Length: 568
Image (cartoon, rainbow, N blue to C red):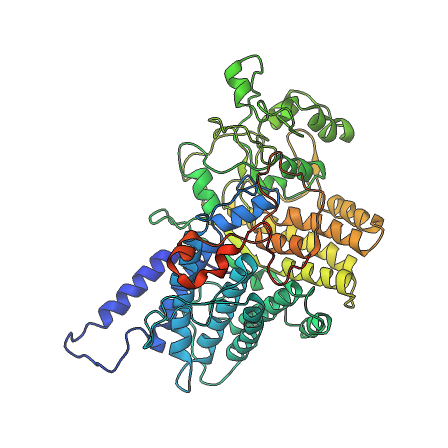
């Protein structure tokens, strides 16, 4: 597991040492040294800070919105976005992450620099910039980050997204050459992801290349052969230890814990958005062993529907067109979870369902004071609590909060290979890889959860309502669905639905998969959606207002104008 331990404290302490050690003689100045181009000695500091900033941004609000677009949680689940939605994201990716990475690249380019630091920074830059293209399309690239250069560019031009992507593929190749270069090897410090392990950075680079090639497969006539070459390298991420994962720390002051933990476990009232009903119902209906790791119930009291106050707090009380409604009294839910499973719907079951308090997708009704009723994120990936028999509102700060953001994992790599086989005809056994992907992800969730919460139980798990969650039975169910799919497209739909369940905690890979394939196609539509599905994010108002070279971006409509690799 990649370590992201005590990031803020580490960086602050290291920075203080660096500053103090540089103050031996305040008058010993070298006017020929450019303070905006740090020496190699500062690369460790910039690397640590860039990774910390990246984790904070990538795992934050944008991730929640992407999961909302895909019907998993309530964040932007009605697709109604504004031009101010991503001002901070845009600004921070450029000013905090990319600026620091550019500092490392400048310091280590040339005969005196470290190829390893250079390669790591290039790979991270390729990841960040390609992610921005995936989200926004055309962005400032070549002219960006030059506001303090000898010839300042304060209003950078936007570049074609396809051209930038081609540059990122080349940058990945350069980064791989750097991290595998034995010339002038130095010990890499400040690496909070892989601890300076360059072989793992190489695997990340090749896995990132596979991801970018998969994204472009619909517009790249050479995609199949290029993807085959990457897979044939045999150097893709293939284990948890190699996963490109940000692990948040457990520190309270400053608070660097998982964003979901901060929303759910640190205040008197839960402030996390709604977990959507379809996601929680279907994962339980399939007896998914990840269920008690994903979620934590905090309420076990069934709301009295004869009491107007309690009735109005119940989900869907104001929206007759809901599909799922309030679980303890929903005929559809009771039928699917109990009658169809030959399970008794008794008082224990009612108490259990009372804790499955969420929301139908894009329910337009107002939000009541229901924070202390909602189902909240559990031990994976937020670092919260495993779901035990008795629901309870967690005491503030009692769980660790040391969760993870699984940015690009061995399971994602497997799903890319499965898609390549089914959609492009790349050689391989898609079913065997699908089986491994499900098993491996369950294993990751269980291993992380049991290491984080001592109450976590390995499958098979008997739930409070008598339901048994067993890994083999679950995998067999999905392999049966795969076998029964009529053709490769139908199989890809089955794969996409399992990726939906696997994407708890990371919306990026699922969002891209959906735009490439249109799958899964069985997600509940928003009850009320003022806009269409977002095929990209809207450009930030700050950029449109302050940059006169953003004229073309002003005409872009986020639910109409697709990015270059999405011709669907």
